Image (cartoon, rainbow, N blue to C red; front, side, top):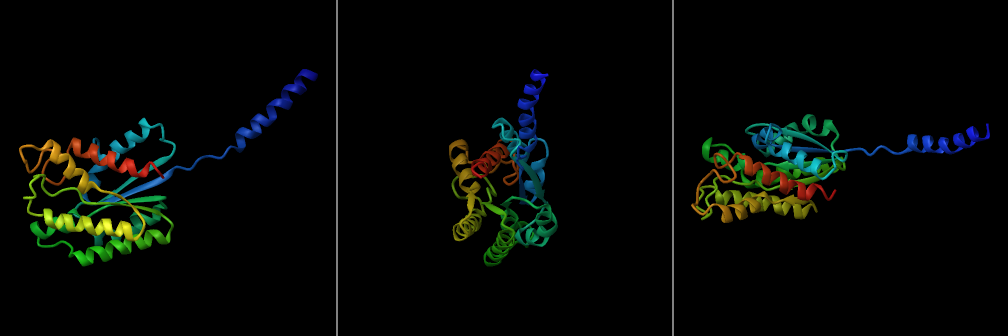
Length: 226
């Protein structure tokens, strides 16, 4: 009897202690963007690759990734759909990856977003997320053409919109994933023939295997510190 009592005495605290251990809540991360992000949840996409990086780091219990990309979206489309597609899902962190169509569609469709309106809508998105105490991470748009001699027709505009995003990050004390810089740096080293595509994209805009891997790695550098 005495042995049984002793065993019970030592076991009860262990059982109680285990039952009372807090369950770590995963950080819900929504990646908010256009067709590049829409494709990112498919096999080989950058969100799938990002999830693989998280697994390799043994942190699958810390992050939950949700892709919220819609083809042809521009910054004002994100603003209009953020209540249903972002805020209603109660994220801890939102990664905003937008800007390519705001520039590109001016050239190919006669639409797009003027720089001043781009900045205002982007700030409005940030304001709504800040009001909910959601951590916000900004991404610069990566590329519209991969030539390295600044001869892509929209290099100037893309650089201007990237600068707007960097300034918004600084103004709002936010982290930024500078994909524009990362892509330029990579292409300078890996595109000696000055090709317009097929380095990190298959059409100058949408990501190929290497492009998806690079975007995943650059985003992971930033979100892993939170």
